[in-house]
Length: 261
Ligand code: MN
Image: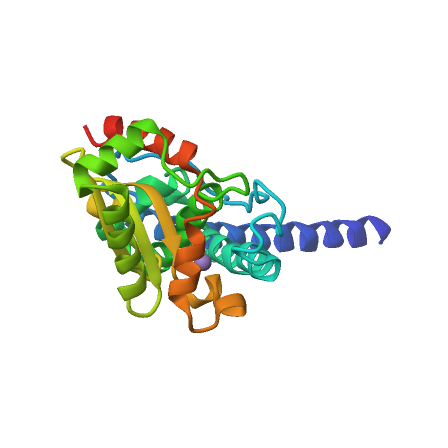
């Protein structure tokens, strides 16, 4: 009797295992089925690479203390902006890419220069959140507590050539930042003709999406200044000129000239 009972138990276990295996296989094939739909996404390579970050994205620490940019940008704003807002862009970009593992190998720049080719299910989320991760990662580095107030040699020359003078450039950049309705960014970029241009983008759109290489950017979302400056966006824009990391802008300018070739 014991042997028969043992045999019966064995059969039950074997059948249960078989059933579970079948269920798992079915689940897997459904999963694989979803993948094949997006396997042939025609992603174009890009030279517009500044960061080269890939999934899973993580929040890098600020390159200086949260209060290091005081009095121009206050500690509380830096803390919330970096640890909450930037983190949220990262989390949401990662979530979107978890749904489409085929896209995980691409850099932020590849994703953002191929928005039109991305599957609709993730396109807007990557535009906003991968865009947000890209823009903020640059933004923290574009500021420094040890700022010189004027651009370094090559950028200074290029600015004079493109805009007539540093003051004329400043006025143009301020205007782009001030007049961006709602949320967005003001930029100094290298365009396809290797010329410096001032532009602005809405929301978390990046200059990459229109073939431009950003070398300086200012976040004009209210979350970037409201705690200290409330509705006075222009005061925040004015303060930004005291914290610009010009040596980095100079480096990016050199990178940009090569990248847009
Ligand atoms: Mn922001």
